[in-house]
Image 1 (cartoon, rainbow, N blue to C red):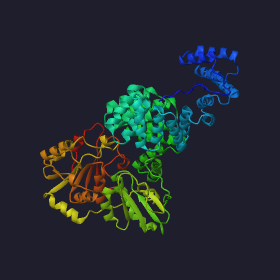
Image 2 (image 1 turned 60 degrees about the vertical axis):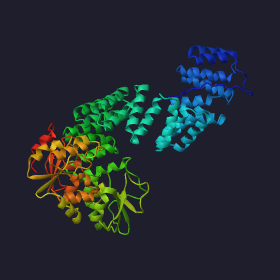
Image 3 (image 1 turned 45 degrees about the vertical axis):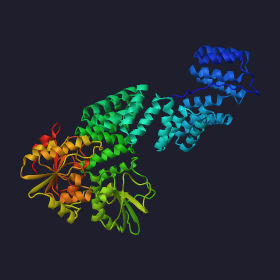
Image 4 (image 1 turned 180 degrees about the horizontal axis):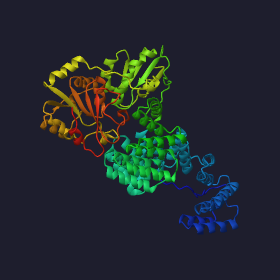
Length: 627
């Protein structure tokens, strides 16, 4: 929402001020009509006749400011205040001029001076609120915006307060104010794009898309709206539409917004166009040589082309100038871990904890010192597979004197983990981390355990989880005689690279089903109706919909002879149980834990990595597998 930066209102009252002169009224009319040069001449003529006319000096300053003469404008407003310290808007206008010079302290002083004269001055309250919000003084900003709303209710006041509430995470309140704003100004692009973002965050993708499209109709070059619409469409795998909007946003501000370029590069990488992403990063580097953000993007593009040495060099170059750059450290760490450079990889992997998704706890992080007499909180993180993979390190805690350990994991994992480590105190998470944590002396995130324990290489051993014998026997009784092999062909659609790791459907595994000496069992969670029909028509038993948690999944896996799966938690669980598993890996966006080449992984000895060749179909990969 664009708010007039300069104002020329006039006070009609008693006191030191004389009634407005004809010259003042003429200049004011010309200014209102947009005749800046004429207004300037009229004001100058009027001041020749009446040099003590403070309102006319104020008006002359407005003319000068709008004609691009800030020095003259400042002189005029200063003169107005010298003649009458209560000249309406003069302090406010000087504050606007200070903001154009990026002098926030002077601007704040001017706005507060205007508010001392008129405590309800709407524009001063709004601009001071913006300044305070930019400075992170959110409580003071909220007070300003609420005072403005009381003084002059309107679309601008509701938008400003809504924007602040959104920054504070008070989405419901923010939405209410933005909708009031749009009731009176339905085409306000800023309010539309912000409301669209809030709706998208709440999962209302349909209405969010509609709001963002309305914002772009109102302001076709709106960078934030175009970028956010592109991201929303990316999340829905609507790649072509997403690319159009991201490219338009980038074209509208080619050198202004890192987010636009990064998102466009992410789309190119997600759609297997790493060469184009590389060109985009190099174009950015040509404009800003050595910038760490562009070197990070370049490294990602090179990594996806298998040019790992060059990728590592790009990330190391970026870290040389920006050693605290989180994404550079993370990405270099992933590459180091994929190569088996464990010590360096785990050290750089710690950068992930700087991301906003991780809570900041009041307790210190555990650094590996003795835990005797102390209560340790272990926080499992990221996906189910990550939790299963790193749960192996719990057994090593007792060697550090840990007798009181509280572990926090997502609820579907709880029955499996409680059975395996009953000596720990287990708490379930529903969704994200809780607002309050149980009493403890220190904490550690699960994926930091290799670094903290200095257990850099994956621990040797066949398995570290066991299924419940009774549950396993119950599943075994339901299985037919002979060799039983499970199938999992897709993961969670919300995963950013699910389109790379998941198969288009179970039909991609058809070549495997040619082996009629095997009983094929679907362990796929939540199969849709088309998948159920295909399974029934091809003689595949459907048992995945009966898996209520990971204890049930472990029991069913333990009753099988083998598993064929894409990169999901079920593959991790099979490996942790020691069940033979063929893990299908895409040629694109392969996770660090599966290394760079080869069919073996040090994480799970029972896994065979089936790597799809670049350009190869999933069906072709299935056709050359032996299970």
